[in-house]
Image (cartoon, rainbow, N blue to C red; front, side, top):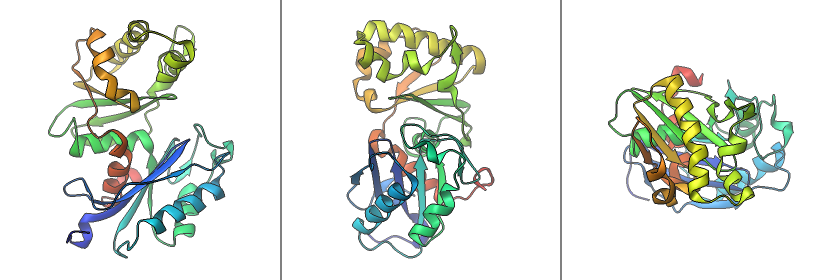
Length: 259
């Protein structure tokens, strides 16, 4: 590990429905100071099983400085450390004191946030939205649609805009990347659905920019040029490291919206 002052080093852990990733991070530069480690999410995604896997991941990172803060992001609405929903993990997480579980298991204080919020914050600090002012909306297109709202660099947590009702349905069931795969849609047909979704976001929020994340963002040339929007829309740049970087960075801040 390179030399760093204690307040620049943090651990970021990104919990997903299929994998749990983590690394030690220099939050000043956004550099990973260790290799990114990845463990499979335990089958069923129950709290104690995931907590055990996170502990194993922490141990795999080697010598974590005692002064390093720890940020964990998770696919749920997070309110004061409590998971209020659960996406692709056990329903036992709903209404669960998640932050307390991880603090007890890891034996240290942590910061616990929504995964899309972490990714969005990382893109503002290190990625596609760095230096941008105004309202930026990050969308992650995967199994569902995750979203983050950031205004002049300040995160508004738990924006669940993937669940907007359009045409009488929860629209992530129509426009998430999983819908493209499930229905074997062409890029053009999928882009038509995305057009409807992003037009609705424009009508509601008049944003200054969209950032598109999720694994499919590496294929952005296939679908972003098909969208006709008044708002600039660009692919995310941090990809699989976004959750790690955002969670680590937020853990060093302890700003009021996380308390």
